Image (tube, rainbow, N blue to C red; front, top):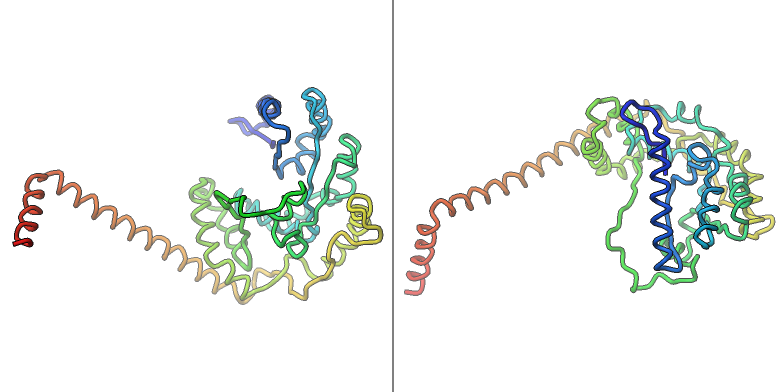
Length: 322
């Protein structure tokens, strides 16, 4: 799900509807073979506010048509952690150039009023069909997201489960997100291979940058204000959906870290690391290409003189035995 634009940059509602219907057709076909189907999509959480405000009504109609029950598993992250993470994602993946401050200026704070959004969902599919989990690694069942997710279904993450292809969505930390944001102004960054190349080079030292310059995108005062703003709704989520009266939804500890500043003293070092990272990447790629070229030349030489090469090998073998 998501906004689709035509070649003129206008929203293509017909194509969006077609994609939705195609997706639901697949779901109906799968239910002919399976009793349970698990779908994962972060876009649903955003889409129910903008792209498809009637999403859950449409989903419920499809459920009644196919005679299946919708159940929703929601992982919640503390709001002051979500905002930077979402901005980080669109800078890293989508090539966005706006600063964090400008991003915050256009984001509706109600977007992360978890209780109100859950109540909208519950009014259609029922509160009993919504399962809320905390996205806090220290509180994951079994110590990992994989254990935690399977525990929702009463399953254990055993050796029987194998991650055939583990794809981690690493963020950009320290100063690397700002370097990527500035690079996004370059026209070539619109091309996906270019974005991936630059992101990979930044990932190489993102951990170093974070270690050298640990920071938050909010000040301690701003974090405190956000937690106060969302606190009442978060406590309602804990009480009504997690059945924990009087409990906090999250660990509201505020770390003693400075707010990120662009003119911090570590930026120059990170720019140098980026130059070094790209240089090393190109150096290694060049070595691989030279190796492949040498192999191709040896193969070409063998193809041009196959019998001569074969005779030389036979002679070497004979003399070696002799």
